[in-house]
Image: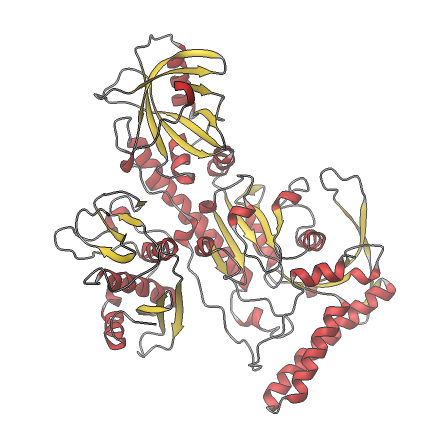
Length: 628
């Protein structure tokens, strides 16, 4: 490099390796205290992923500086470090506070001395994600109640039976009375089974007496206590009866497991090949949550007993869940994780794009709902997980890795490629479907977190309606009829032409991601809402609300197609704002979307994107924009 850098000395522990020049990037401060680069350790070698690909995935565009050795000999220690890192896919790690600075060996077209890029990442995160990426493994986080199970105690059964009986007493519609009466009958039958279990440690199942089997609970780390629970498993009916505290019969619980759980479970870790690292995030009390998970995973097939306390995460009832909390020990990056939950809004806004929402499990209210579709709900979730993993690593292997191998020390930081994100391959779906003739809101069928603990422990629119409806119908042809989970190739990606100002075709999955990112950074909720379509040929219609304001409508042959088109039209409508005063929000940001690398920046770059100026939201058109 022609400009002069900051002279520094490189150490590995207490051993001096040589001198180097440091060139901070993008106005970053000099990252090394006392002008000393003190390497604490080398990262584990990687089997297939060069360090820069891992760092770009978990900490994108985090290059703090470039480091270039001064004149060295063939046998110098600094050169040996460089060759070891370059050949074995390792990085040299400098620990500064809660961050790790990774020195990544880079090839050079010009320099004849060792050259490094220095990338910052949260301490511990690199090593965790390195193993996952090498194994082609992602993380999956499960909710428990009404997602995988429905559980009740005698008290919760009595409360639900009483509430349902009151509804029936005041209901005049005979159809609704019939539906609620059938629901009430199912509650009473299961309550009777639970009563038999509590009193006799046995139940009568279709005339056959089934007794308890003692199941030993694997010991938790640091605990010497041996726990044996009396359990009855009615496998064919997906029913389990257990006792949270084996000595107290009132802690007995009747559990219904969601059908097809075994199909999903076997996919996650098939034939010893781990496809997903499994976590649980629930608002239930800890002892209850641990036992419910044990019933789902009795052989500790998905989560080992030593990992249970870290991987079964209990959130205080009423608070919001977050992947940051689930991965608080830097065990995974949220970009590499997906969530299976029956509720979207319980998750932090930034995590919602990574949630696959399943219909609530309602075996009492709508027992036939699970089998109403050809593919059971959890088999759909399995297919979604499979597609997410396939799409993520297709992007990682075919795009990110290929472009990483083309980079040299002299490249600009903005030449780094886009890294895949699980949210790129997930599509939120409407699940608020009333599955039977009972149109009343169903009674919550499983205990919430506080209940389990108590009982078991001791707008203004942009454009008028007709214009948006017309826009939705006329732009449908720009979408592919077949929407694959895999992202479109780079040749099909696009941006706003800097000369014409016209938007060409972006990969469909990016429209939703860009819109959600705009909403996230402006603290405005982006919501997709299904409406009744007006066309006979297009079966689905979706409108986009941006902080309660309707900004786009999409129509399509599938709900997914309609959502993608609605997002595209919403972006077009935002971009059509004629001045800086049409739409305001109470924050100042520069949010720019790079048309080549598909990444957001807080600086002036050739973009189409979003700018906040004088507390005002605008869409920036043109080749170059900056903010005051």
